[in-house]
Image (cartoon, rainbow, N blue to C red; front, side):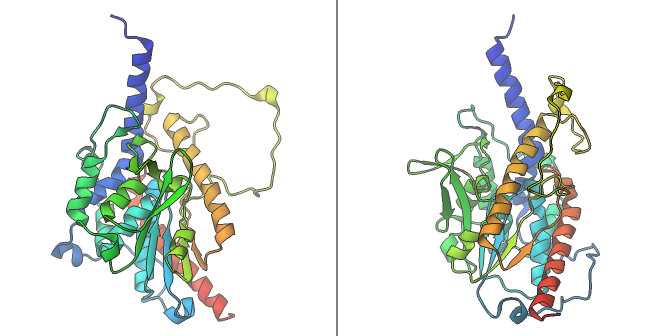
Length: 359
């Protein structure tokens, strides 16, 4: 019996989408499965030698903010967002108190774990021990209407391990960003259930079912606000620390530079029908498969938006880990990502300290 082409297409697209979700984003959420604080977590000591100087970092809060209220804006970026753990670790060692936290997408998840009281070392341990098989327990496929994954399992795990906390009851004020997929308008979730805020902010379009607020359809906040600097400023922050983990694949050229090519030399490169199964995860190919194309499309667009935002809002301290070698699905590179975030933060703090002291 022949399968109608429309049904076959749906099956292939469904399989490809599930694969992308698992490879690119599922491991983010598998960490939530283990966000319990126990004695082993609390006593955990990092086994990694994070470079850079003597600790604690010789920078005082007066050098950084002149006692202003400090807001931390954590950007989105899937596996790239694991660098936020290193950032928080360095800020903690520098004794820099965070008064407000705003997060987009992956930044909302790491930020939520932080404001929920999970120790930084525990969050680090979780990231270093993520296994892809953990993802399966969190996947609850649904008949695709507005997304392939319902997300109820993810909510349940977040609720179990982060707790049924209300944002307004947290010691550190917190906000998560979301976007109306129909209008592009930004929404900031600053009240209500912490778990629901995270679930909404990580609602990757077409992968997870969107969330509804009245008549509004909400998706991943990183879609239009990759680094939520304005959100944290609206919360009352007077000194903004922004963490942008999104970098264009190639920063070797000036933004205004235009390259000219000859159309006669353009060819059609066609991959096989199941090329999405390739799992190399490498960027050194001149013939990208569908997974790489999807990932790069999102990341390049968000990287450009993030740069425009930084130019517009001008954070007081900008931390930019070089994440070009970490793809969206590279959760096995947690150690590398955390170290990148840690060292980038030390570098930014020391440069700022020299600047304010006119050294």
